Image 1: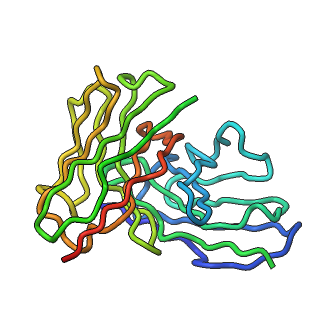
Image 2 (image 1 turned 90 degrees about the horizontal axis):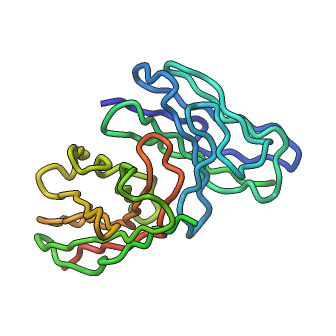
Length: 107
Length: 116
């Protein structure tokens, strides 16, 4: 089974900051990597699929990069509404494992 | 627009059973693979099961294999998850999710609580 490891597990940043979250797979997953944002009491929302393709309707300040085992989600200029928990997920092979999540707080 | 509405959750004793349903609308249900994903209270996301668009292949997490069964009825635009031999650690919000690799729509979830 493929293990997904996110870092950091939590972070606090200010409005306007550039924020980076990383996700590492225990083996190569090509570009089969999704990123989600989840706010309290809500279902997750797909931000990025295929490691770097922005889902329709997602602000362009979000971007994804990477392939193989190392991936990055970047928020170029943090906005107040970007708080929440971010998850990566590999869709390369079953079980389609998730990272443990990164809790993003706005200072 | 795409809608996924889960139902069937509730409180059940350990060893009991439940059947979850997910009613889909707003897209061609029979053309998409579907997942179940769960989230225990205060915890992260856990993938549970996937079924191909035509029901021909099914995949499960090791934690539920042999106890849970995913199925679908394309004539009714409905996805199912049969939960048997339930354990306290199965307590979670269960989400229905559209798509195989591009999982772009999630329902709001149905809560399963396993407790005596």
